Length: 247
Image (cartoon, rainbow, N blue to C red; front, side):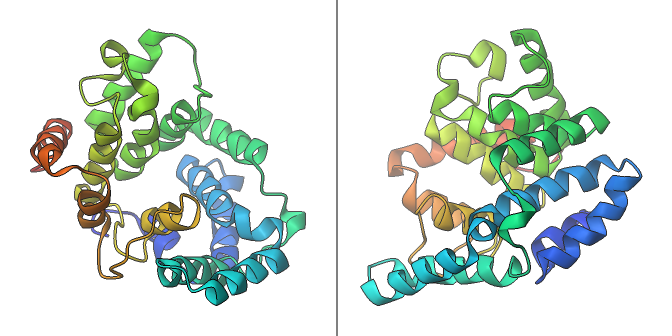
């Protein structure tokens, strides 16, 4: 993941997110906004497992026995989460309110990605269209892959009819995909085992049948109608034109 700090790379590369979270806590204690944001990513990634580790493992066994098409990919993604989150327990209390609170703290400390994520969760740091418009512009100007992927859900169909506030690349499923692909171009880990692909599979139930596909290839196969491909490429180019990176 070129261009990302070692702390950021750790979120994708660590095999033990419990140990990684302890490393982040040291940064959180001294007010490091990025550490606060990354801790919220760990909480979000591991919440499903940590809430009920035994139940999670049991569900995985059921999926394995059912032999569903796509079951192997789902199982692989779930096992990846289980391995990386293995030392978390229900008492860690990972929940939506905890994650929102963590992101509020991070945003107030200066994390643009956390601020973008709060907008996508419909919990913006400030009310009003002017704030939203200005936040979108700051994300575009930043070239921060984490901020791009964090704001992406707000740019999907939920943002339909709000292009004056959210910008031209908003308001459709293809828009959301374009923001995610742009984050890949900016250095986000969009590999088959990366957090984006894992979350799509484990939480969204949308798993690639080809375990070699990265997000950009998978999204084009699964989420982009053939006639929409040029449109998505154009959207990605528009987003990246603000950053100096080729679309």
